[in-house]
Structures are given as structure tokens and as C-alpha cells.
Length: 394
Image (tube, rainbow, N blue to C red; front, side, top):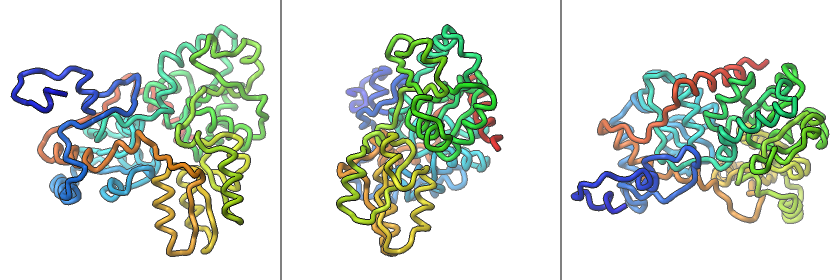
């Protein structure tokens, strides 16, 4: 930290110092950390003008992607907005853009690097913008899980299905073992395909999406599902439990969607008579079961677009998006509230703020490539194979 503030000292920053500055990443733990660096001050009144100027200078060389959960101050500079997979595909469709600035989190930028050409460079404005869910499944843990499945005599029957919200390593594991990737929109199609290939599914890393899809959309029972806990010997499961299960769910979850509870649903129904409860399938099973509507981020947006004027909605997803939708549809007389009384942003997604974006854009405009996200060739090949299987789903 001292070397960053006193450039006259001829001292090379340590890896830890670079991590704290947001200039490097710990691949085993993408957690939010302090990141002052040489960023513009958050109170700088010229930040918007500086971002516009840098983006204009870069022209067609830069393509800025903005995830739905980003702050409004960042979203205003996005060339396209969407969920993680849509944005990665949008980036691949813009081969003329030398720089892809991904305003999202680490696994999203990895997916963009996997799907774009070798000539394109993916930049994440803050390398500490990670995903707690993606962090809950490491390559080492998943390899150990596969050993447990092998010892139980079921590995040959298991097809891995990994949620898009996973690291490139996990996507590569999935591709290498004959599995596919899914999004919250096509999870049922992915599971239908997987059960045509094998008798069981290992679903990574979000247990709630896996359980909700299996039980709510495919008619399985909760007894068909077991949870593999990587922090317990053999995942906390017996060989008999693994043999009996159809869905082996990884013990992972979204820290934002996981906070919604059945009490949240009951409370909002009492406070707002006639309210429609609409939640994301990353929510707990009891929340999904009590909701009126369940769907992906894109589904939520389209449902509100189609909603009649005067209707009332409680939304169980990230607050930046809910607030943006509430403001957008207020003129149409639609009342949209956050499902929980407690405000909850995605803390790591919110690391991408205007100072970080300005720093990244100005650095690129000056010819300095910063915070590049680059997936190694072998990992990319197997991860791309899993993604291509998803794209080929009927």
C-alpha cells in the first residue's frame, strides 16, 4: 500500500499488495477487498465526463457490457445490458471490438474470454469483483467429489450439469466429464438432456436452482435430491444415499437470493394485499413454492413489462435491478417493491463502480491494458465444449 502512495520508492508491490489494490486476483477466493489503487475519487464531479471522454476516444475498439445487477452509474455506460450468458454472447458477436469491458463479476468475464476470439481482450474493472456462489466450488473440491462418486460405484451413471455462475475450471470439469452448462432460463432443458445421457446428475454449484428445477419443473420429489457438502468427509453422504439419489446437489448458494425467506413472502402479502410475488429460482425451495411466479432475470423483466397498470409486485432478486425496474414502471402505475425489508445488494457485483470503470477506460485509452481476464487454453477448450453442448440443447 505504501509503494502505491509513494512512487519515489523503488519497491515492487508484493502479490498481496496488488490483490488489495484490485490489480491482481486470488483464483481460489474471489472475495471483496479494499481497492483504493490510483482510482479517481468517488466524489469527483467530473467522473461522468471522464468516462464519456475515454469511451469516445476508444470508439469501436471498446465494447462495454453491463450486467442487470450493476449500479445505475455504471449501467449508463453499457453498450448492452443483460444476464451473464447473453452478455458473453454479445461480446462474441462484436469481433471488431479489441477490448471487452465487462461490468459484472469474475466468472462472467471468464465466460466472455472463452467465447470471444483470441484477438479480443476482456477487462474486469476490479479483479476483486467475484461471486460467492462460484467460490463455493473449487476444482480441487469437485475432483474429490468425483472420486467419492467413483468409490460409491455411481460415477459412470452421473452427468455433471453446471450453472453458468461457476468458474472456468468448473465449466472445464463439466465439459471433460460429458456434461453441459445451464442458465436459470434453460435449466430444465439441460437436465432433460442430462437424464437422457445418464441416470444421475451432479448439479454445480447452486443447490437451490438444481432442487427447484428438479422438483418444481420436472416432478421429482425432495427425496430424490441429496446435498453434497465439500467440507465433510465423502460429502456427508453414504454410498447408499448416492446410489439412491437422482440429483446430487452441490452445497452452494447465492448470498443475495439465499436471504429471502418464507417469512419475507408472508410479510409482504400482509403488507400489500393483492401483491404478486415473483422470485428468481436461486431462492430457497420454500420461497419458490410460496411465490406466484418464478423465473430468470430476463423472465422477471419481461413479466413486469407485460404486467397490467396498477398491478403490485414483490420481487425476490438483486436490489439494483428491482429499484431500476420500480423506477422504470412507476409512470405506468405499477407498484414494485423488494421482497425483503432488508436492503441487499450483491456486494461483489457492486465493486464495479464509476471510479473503477473510469480508471479502466482511461487506462485503455492511454494504451495500457489493465485487469485482463484470460483463461488458459486447456481450460478454455473443455469449458467451451460444455458451453457448446448447452447451445445445442433442443
